[in-house]
Length: 250
Image 1 (tube, one colour):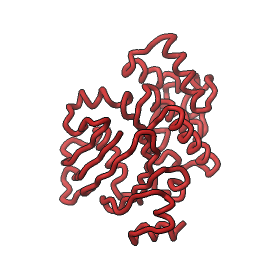
Image 2 (spheres, rainbow, N blue to C red):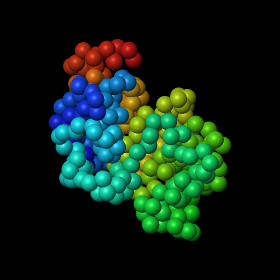
Image 3 (cartoon, rainbow, N blue to C red):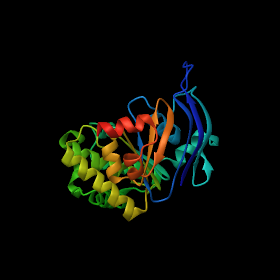
Protein backbone atom coordinates (compact mmCIF):
# COMPACT_ATOMS: atom_id res chain seq x y z
CA UNK A 1 0.00 0.00 0.00
CA UNK A 2 2.68 2.51 1.07
CA UNK A 3 6.36 1.98 0.34
CA UNK A 4 8.89 4.64 1.39
CA UNK A 5 12.45 4.11 0.20
CA UNK A 6 15.63 6.02 1.14
CA UNK A 7 13.70 9.25 1.79
CA UNK A 8 15.79 12.38 2.30
CA UNK A 9 14.20 15.79 3.00
CA UNK A 10 15.88 19.16 3.55
CA UNK A 11 13.87 22.34 4.09
CA UNK A 12 14.79 25.55 2.21
CA UNK A 13 17.73 27.35 3.79
CA UNK A 14 18.63 24.40 6.02
CA UNK A 15 22.00 22.71 5.59
CA UNK A 16 21.02 19.62 7.59
CA UNK A 17 18.33 17.21 6.49
CA UNK A 18 15.07 16.92 8.45
CA UNK A 19 14.70 13.30 7.27
CA UNK A 20 17.67 11.11 6.38
CA UNK A 21 17.49 7.78 4.55
CA UNK A 22 14.13 6.62 5.92
CA UNK A 23 12.62 3.41 4.49
CA UNK A 24 9.50 1.53 5.58
CA UNK A 25 6.42 -0.20 4.15
CA UNK A 26 2.78 -0.44 5.22
CA UNK A 27 0.74 -3.49 4.31
CA UNK A 28 -2.83 -2.99 3.12
CA UNK A 29 -5.25 -3.03 6.04
CA UNK A 30 -2.55 -2.47 8.67
CA UNK A 31 -2.33 0.09 11.47
CA UNK A 32 1.24 1.28 11.93
CA UNK A 33 2.54 3.70 14.54
CA UNK A 34 5.16 6.31 13.58
CA UNK A 35 6.61 7.19 16.97
CA UNK A 36 9.13 9.79 18.12
CA UNK A 37 9.61 13.00 20.03
CA UNK A 38 8.87 16.44 18.57
CA UNK A 39 11.31 17.30 15.80
CA UNK A 40 12.06 13.68 14.93
CA UNK A 41 10.69 14.05 11.37
CA UNK A 42 7.28 12.38 11.74
CA UNK A 43 5.12 15.23 10.42
CA UNK A 44 7.69 15.99 7.71
CA UNK A 45 7.21 12.46 6.36
CA UNK A 46 3.42 12.86 6.43
CA UNK A 47 3.71 16.17 4.54
CA UNK A 48 5.96 14.52 1.97
CA UNK A 49 3.44 11.71 1.38
CA UNK A 50 0.73 14.32 0.76
CA UNK A 51 2.97 16.51 -1.40
CA UNK A 52 2.52 19.45 1.00
CA UNK A 53 6.12 20.37 1.76
CA UNK A 54 7.10 24.05 1.31
CA UNK A 55 8.31 25.21 -2.09
CA UNK A 56 12.04 24.75 -2.44
CA UNK A 57 12.24 21.73 -0.15
CA UNK A 58 14.75 19.18 -1.43
CA UNK A 59 13.32 15.66 -1.55
CA UNK A 60 14.89 12.47 -2.86
CA UNK A 61 14.01 8.80 -2.66
CA UNK A 62 10.67 7.15 -3.40
CA UNK A 63 7.18 7.35 -1.89
CA UNK A 64 5.01 4.75 -3.59
CA UNK A 65 1.27 4.41 -3.01
CA UNK A 66 -0.25 1.40 -4.76
CA UNK A 67 2.95 1.10 -6.82
CA UNK A 68 3.03 4.73 -8.05
CA UNK A 69 5.86 7.04 -6.99
CA UNK A 70 4.20 10.22 -5.69
CA UNK A 71 7.46 12.18 -5.93
CA UNK A 72 7.34 11.96 -9.73
CA UNK A 73 3.81 13.38 -10.05
CA UNK A 74 2.77 16.92 -10.95
CA UNK A 75 0.90 19.08 -8.44
CA UNK A 76 -2.33 18.52 -10.37
CA UNK A 77 -1.85 14.75 -10.33
CA UNK A 78 -1.14 14.85 -6.60
CA UNK A 79 -4.24 16.97 -5.99
CA UNK A 80 -6.37 14.32 -7.65
CA UNK A 81 -5.01 11.66 -5.29
CA UNK A 82 -5.53 13.61 -2.07
CA UNK A 83 -8.83 12.72 -0.39
CA UNK A 84 -9.55 9.92 -2.89
CA UNK A 85 -6.45 7.79 -2.25
CA UNK A 86 -4.67 9.43 0.69
CA UNK A 87 -6.35 11.56 3.35
CA UNK A 88 -5.16 13.35 6.49
CA UNK A 89 -6.55 13.74 9.98
CA UNK A 90 -4.42 16.73 11.06
CA UNK A 91 -2.97 17.40 14.48
CA UNK A 92 -5.67 19.25 16.43
CA UNK A 93 -9.16 18.70 15.00
CA UNK A 94 -9.81 22.45 14.97
CA UNK A 95 -7.31 22.71 12.11
CA UNK A 96 -9.78 20.78 9.92
CA UNK A 97 -12.55 23.35 10.17
CA UNK A 98 -13.34 27.00 9.40
CA UNK A 99 -15.18 28.49 12.41
CA UNK A 100 -17.94 30.18 10.35
CA UNK A 101 -19.00 27.03 8.46
CA UNK A 102 -21.05 24.14 9.77
CA UNK A 103 -19.58 20.65 10.02
CA UNK A 104 -21.93 19.47 7.27
CA UNK A 105 -20.90 22.24 4.87
CA UNK A 106 -17.24 21.30 5.31
CA UNK A 107 -17.91 17.69 4.34
CA UNK A 108 -20.25 18.68 1.50
CA UNK A 109 -17.53 20.90 0.03
CA UNK A 110 -15.07 17.99 -0.06
CA UNK A 111 -17.72 15.77 -1.65
CA UNK A 112 -18.54 18.40 -4.29
CA UNK A 113 -14.95 19.29 -5.21
CA UNK A 114 -13.31 15.88 -5.03
CA UNK A 115 -16.15 13.39 -5.55
CA UNK A 116 -18.55 15.38 -7.77
CA UNK A 117 -21.35 14.71 -5.30
CA UNK A 118 -23.84 17.47 -4.46
CA UNK A 119 -27.39 18.21 -3.37
CA UNK A 120 -29.47 15.56 -1.62
CA UNK A 121 -26.92 12.85 -2.39
CA UNK A 122 -24.19 14.83 -0.62
CA UNK A 123 -26.37 15.49 2.43
CA UNK A 124 -27.22 11.81 2.66
CA UNK A 125 -23.54 10.95 2.44
CA UNK A 126 -22.73 13.49 5.20
CA UNK A 127 -25.26 11.88 7.53
CA UNK A 128 -23.87 8.41 6.81
CA UNK A 129 -20.28 9.55 7.46
CA UNK A 130 -21.18 11.16 10.77
CA UNK A 131 -23.00 8.04 11.90
CA UNK A 132 -19.99 5.92 10.92
CA UNK A 133 -17.83 7.90 13.36
CA UNK A 134 -20.50 7.55 16.07
CA UNK A 135 -21.93 11.07 15.82
CA UNK A 136 -25.59 11.98 15.42
CA UNK A 137 -26.49 13.22 11.94
CA UNK A 138 -27.70 16.49 13.54
CA UNK A 139 -24.02 17.40 14.12
CA UNK A 140 -23.98 18.44 10.44
CA UNK A 141 -25.92 21.60 11.37
CA UNK A 142 -23.58 22.62 14.15
CA UNK A 143 -20.46 24.81 14.09
CA UNK A 144 -17.02 23.64 15.24
CA UNK A 145 -17.13 25.70 18.46
CA UNK A 146 -20.34 23.92 19.45
CA UNK A 147 -18.62 20.53 19.58
CA UNK A 148 -16.50 18.98 22.31
CA UNK A 149 -12.90 18.04 21.58
CA UNK A 150 -13.83 14.40 21.04
CA UNK A 151 -16.75 15.29 18.77
CA UNK A 152 -14.52 17.57 16.68
CA UNK A 153 -11.96 14.80 16.32
CA UNK A 154 -14.63 12.35 15.18
CA UNK A 155 -15.95 14.94 12.71
CA UNK A 156 -12.40 15.44 11.39
CA UNK A 157 -12.15 11.69 10.80
CA UNK A 158 -15.50 11.74 8.96
CA UNK A 159 -14.18 14.60 6.81
CA UNK A 160 -11.01 12.64 5.96
CA UNK A 161 -13.06 9.56 5.00
CA UNK A 162 -15.47 11.50 2.74
CA UNK A 163 -14.03 10.16 -0.53
CA UNK A 164 -13.20 6.64 0.71
CA UNK A 165 -9.38 6.88 0.73
CA UNK A 166 -7.35 3.69 0.97
CA UNK A 167 -4.65 5.28 3.16
CA UNK A 168 -5.39 7.42 6.23
CA UNK A 169 -2.66 9.52 7.83
CA UNK A 170 -3.60 10.34 11.42
CA UNK A 171 -1.21 12.99 12.79
CA UNK A 172 -1.43 13.03 16.60
CA UNK A 173 -5.23 12.46 16.52
CA UNK A 174 -5.56 12.24 20.32
CA UNK A 175 -3.59 15.37 21.26
CA UNK A 176 -5.21 17.45 24.04
CA UNK A 177 -7.95 14.85 24.65
CA UNK A 178 -8.59 13.23 28.02
CA UNK A 179 -7.66 9.57 28.38
CA UNK A 180 -11.25 8.29 28.08
CA UNK A 181 -11.82 10.27 24.88
CA UNK A 182 -8.43 9.13 23.56
CA UNK A 183 -9.46 5.51 24.06
CA UNK A 184 -12.71 6.15 22.20
CA UNK A 185 -10.89 7.68 19.23
CA UNK A 186 -8.47 4.76 19.07
CA UNK A 187 -11.33 2.23 19.18
CA UNK A 188 -13.00 4.17 16.37
CA UNK A 189 -9.86 4.06 14.20
CA UNK A 190 -9.52 0.34 14.81
CA UNK A 191 -13.14 -0.30 13.88
CA UNK A 192 -12.95 1.83 10.73
CA UNK A 193 -9.73 0.06 9.71
CA UNK A 194 -11.46 -3.30 9.96
CA UNK A 195 -14.74 -2.26 8.34
CA UNK A 196 -13.19 -0.30 5.47
CA UNK A 197 -9.96 -2.32 5.08
CA UNK A 198 -8.15 0.98 5.66
CA UNK A 199 -4.40 1.30 5.89
CA UNK A 200 -3.63 3.70 8.76
CA UNK A 201 -0.41 5.48 9.69
CA UNK A 202 -0.79 6.74 13.26
CA UNK A 203 1.71 9.52 14.04
CA UNK A 204 2.30 10.03 17.74
CA UNK A 205 4.90 10.79 20.39
CA UNK A 206 3.06 8.44 22.78
CA UNK A 207 4.68 4.99 22.68
CA UNK A 208 2.24 3.29 25.11
CA UNK A 209 -0.73 4.60 23.10
CA UNK A 210 0.73 3.36 19.81
CA UNK A 211 1.74 0.01 21.29
CA UNK A 212 -1.81 -0.58 22.51
CA UNK A 213 -3.39 -0.53 19.02
CA UNK A 214 -0.75 -0.83 16.29
CA UNK A 215 0.35 -3.88 14.32
CA UNK A 216 3.84 -2.43 13.91
CA UNK A 217 5.83 0.47 15.33
CA UNK A 218 8.37 2.68 13.55
CA UNK A 219 10.60 4.65 15.92
CA UNK A 220 12.11 7.94 14.71
CA UNK A 221 14.79 10.16 16.24
CA UNK A 222 16.50 13.23 14.76
CA UNK A 223 15.25 12.50 11.26
CA UNK A 224 16.30 8.87 11.18
CA UNK A 225 14.44 5.59 11.52
CA UNK A 226 16.19 3.82 14.36
CA UNK A 227 14.05 0.74 14.93
CA UNK A 228 10.85 -0.92 13.76
CA UNK A 229 8.93 -4.05 14.56
CA UNK A 230 5.95 -5.51 16.38
CA UNK A 231 4.99 -3.64 19.59
CA UNK A 232 5.65 -6.70 21.77
CA UNK A 233 9.18 -7.04 20.36
CA UNK A 234 10.04 -3.37 20.75
CA UNK A 235 8.73 -3.17 24.30
CA UNK A 236 10.18 -6.42 25.61
CA UNK A 237 13.40 -6.57 23.59
CA UNK A 238 14.30 -3.10 22.20
CA UNK A 239 17.59 -3.07 20.32
CA UNK A 240 18.33 0.67 20.22
CA UNK A 241 19.25 2.70 23.31
CA UNK A 242 16.68 5.38 22.46
CA UNK A 243 13.88 2.82 22.21
CA UNK A 244 14.97 1.39 25.56
CA UNK A 245 14.71 4.88 27.09
CA UNK A 246 11.20 5.29 25.67
CA UNK A 247 10.17 1.92 27.11
CA UNK A 248 11.71 2.73 30.50
CA UNK A 249 9.77 6.02 30.53
CA UNK A 250 6.53 4.02 30.24
